[in-house]
Amino acid sequence: MMNRGQIDVAALRGRHPHHFVGLQREQRMLALVAAALIALLLLGMAYLDFFDAKTLRGITKLGEVAILMLPPDPGSWAHFQLYFWALIETISIALLGTLTAAVLALPLGLLAARNVTASRFLRFLTRRSLDTIRSIDILVWALIWISVVGLGPFAGVLAFATSDIGSFGKLFAEAIEAADRKPVEGIVSTGGGKLLGVRFGILPEVFPVLASQLLYYFESNTRWASVLGVVGAGGIGLQLGEAIRVLELQQASFIILMILIAVALIDVISNRLRFALIGRRVQTA
Image (cartoon, rainbow, N blue to C red):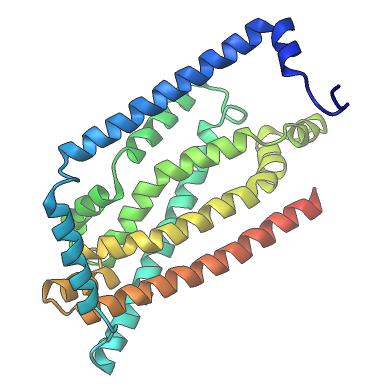
């Protein structure tokens, strides 16, 4: 005698055998795919000598280097001031590059959006241009701009601005395409043009989403700015690379600690701003 809440699986299997056969087939297929992926992973790790003795030696060496990096020490007050202002420069590079990319990407995102640009050829050309820019890594852009304008933070700003245009253009276009059409239709029906519909119907709705994406990229670019500094784009990365090259490992760990604290603070501030924008959007909805 079965309880009311229990399910008679045997009876269901008897009435609908084809459903259970298909489910078992899918489960077997998923198990085979998972096993193949695990085997491929192990094969790749073996090919790259992950199971060799040098992996263990490398981990041991990493532990020795980590011990030499403790405790973090700037070395002197002059070094601390140098690192502090280099960190400020790094944050400035990330901020200026991100803002420049967002400003330039907004019109491109409008051109790439189906609900804004009627010309299919123009949309195709804009999207493929954004794909081309996005396919080149930011480190490559940094090396290109360093060879064009020379070493320094200006090359870092240009690298972020160029690289993020492709990403922002795609994200902005997708956010604009997902916007509600009713505000635009209401503005157009009352005699407003297409530009007014975009200005007062689409942009106010998608602005919190665009701002959230901009804040996330600013946080991410702050980390990347440290990497670009190693190749000569200015900022704290230049000091970090120099400290590692001369084996001043305690100073290097101090610089890394400064970067971690800066990124954590930016993350906290970005989250507060992001939730404030989302809350304002919910209140006005």
